[in-house]
Structure formats: C-alpha cells, structure tokens
Image (cartoon, rainbow, N blue to C red; front, side, top):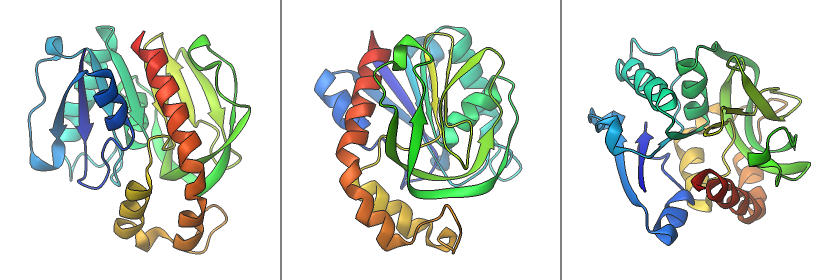
Length: 226
C-alpha cells in the first residue's frame, strides 16, 4: 500500500504513525507544502494522511497551496481513497467536503478528556473517555452525511467519519514526547492564561498519556487499513 502524507510545517510530522507504517512495510511518501512541493498523481496513492499546522484553512492568501490541497483531498475522498486528517488536516478534510471552518470560542491546548461515541463500527473500540493531547484554535461544522464520534465541552466536533474510509481527528493521537516538545517550542506564544490552555510544564506532565494515545492511533490505522 502506498501512503502519502501532507505536511504543513517542519515540526508537525507523522509522530507514531511513522512507526506503524514502518512495522507494516507500506510505501510512504510526502508533500511538504512549506517547501512548495507538488503532490503526486492521485492514482498512485492508496491512503492520504493530512497532518496539522498553525495556519488556518481560510489562510489561502498567505498559503495559496491550501486551495490546491483542498481540491486534492476532495478528489481523494471522491475516488474512495483512505483519508485521515489530523487537527488542521481534519479541518481541511471538513472544508474539502463543503463544511464551514472557523475560530472556536476557546482554544484547546494541552491534555483534556475527550468523550467518544460508538457511532460507527470503525471506532467501536474507543473508550468512553480518554485524556488526549490538543493544540487547536479552530473548529468545523460537520460535513453533510458525516458522523461525529468524539466531543469535548470546549469543542463539540472533535472527530468524524465520512463514508467508510475518511476520518477527521481534531486532536493528536499521533503525538510523541518529541512532537509535544516541538509544538511547545514553536507555539509558546499561545500558552496564555485561559480555561482550556495549559502551561508548558502541565503539558509535559501529561506525557504519561502518550502510550495509550499512540495505541489508539495504531488500532484506528489497523481498522482503516482493512
């Protein structure tokens, strides 16, 4: 299987997903949009993973490739490819499917519990509640015909499934201790006093949750692989 991923900034990569791909022996390639790279022909791709980033879906004036990316995602979904969007990636998938993306009332940065619903067989393994790593200020409306399967008090639409092969996650199951540190380093100006924003030391203190988050990521990837 050929997995291709879209990366928007150097410090938000695949995280633990890279370990899963290596263990499975799948072919992997990437488009680094910040390097002005061109994505491959879609017929060469079996699975598209769209990663996070600090920009917004609506920032196409600063990042003109966002429009190209949304069109590619839309075509990937239409052609029945596996598509996984994470954080900004989930917002891009939602936008590609015609949903509105906009600033949330509250930013969520740090470790906060997510409530999961067994709304689809693909995610019926999820726990009722799990402490999950967040770093987002935007949210999205659910695309038409999508099914929400996760929420928090601060952000109702935390995850969705569209059809049988498209999944959007607002949070970061893929996070590792290294990627958490990288996000703290590059986003420290966002760590202000607010209800759903933790201090750097609080975030690092939550890294004990990474192992279970990664295991949930691996199980979701296993389910999507079938």
